[in-house]
Image (cartoon, rainbow over the protein chains, first blue to last red):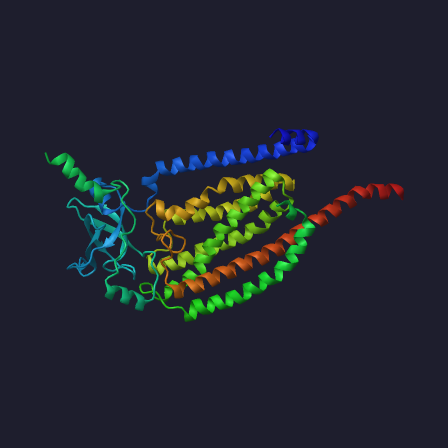
Length: 186
Length: 247
């Protein structure tokens, strides 16, 4: 350390240039650190506004009332049916913990099918049925040829992934049994 | 790193790399398009639409890669006054903007048939759009000053401010619920794309990368030549009064 200082002192011009560079480096590093923390705090504060959709557990935990919201999850197997008017469909959106009944009038995307990810925008009616204005399909991150998918299905390794996670009720799956065991039951 | 600060050394290195990069770009594009569009299998859910991935995903990766290297160059320019760093940032910016535009356009073309919409304001799409504006903003800013050194400094600061957006883009699909699906390739438990589809994806990525290297070298050379011309003009202008006085 002392040797370094002495060597640096020997060439004064070089020494000041080194410290200037070092100072600039610290300024840049500090600025980035501050900026990064500010961005992280802002984004975490606005999480509920940044999420594109809420899970069925979120809707159950905090009913949106008359607000327009997006509901995302899997189209429950065996839940899609045509309504008598011929142009509307009804199905259930599930995150495997909670499921919300949805009705929609219009054309659904090609990818819309049972067991597939879906995002519906609309309002929860007074009867608890989610009336969708728009239905978007969502696909998961798995890409494979049809033969491979068939082989996986035959082997029983095939299960659709639930899109997203709950925001308002972060661990609804674990929280629910805990609540019943500690609070409700004496 | 300062070994490369010498423009003459850069010119020598560039002359070696350029033909290789250009050759790899052409061959890998042909191979990637052939394997991607012809020999790779369709997806079990998306069918042939999945082939948009072979352009969309490499373009998205490049948009992040180019911005990250530009931000690193900004640090080198601000801290060490590296003479080639700002030349690189200027040369790379339009290419990065181009990759981002390709990513946004192909993503939109992919979203319409699959999701049922051209565009949504989810965290992934919005943050990539911001990246596109950062590129455009950088290009506008560096050219907005009469003094190129001040323009370069302002541009470097903008690049560093915008770098917070890079991790946001990458992890947006994990941090928030988005319509865009989570990562398929760079994830802890390994890729979730079947091997026959990964091969064309990586070939196309190599093609995009090689194309970028080749074009950025050409653009950096052009920028250096332009600066030389500018410097010559200045010395000539400075000498001109002397000459006229002598006559």
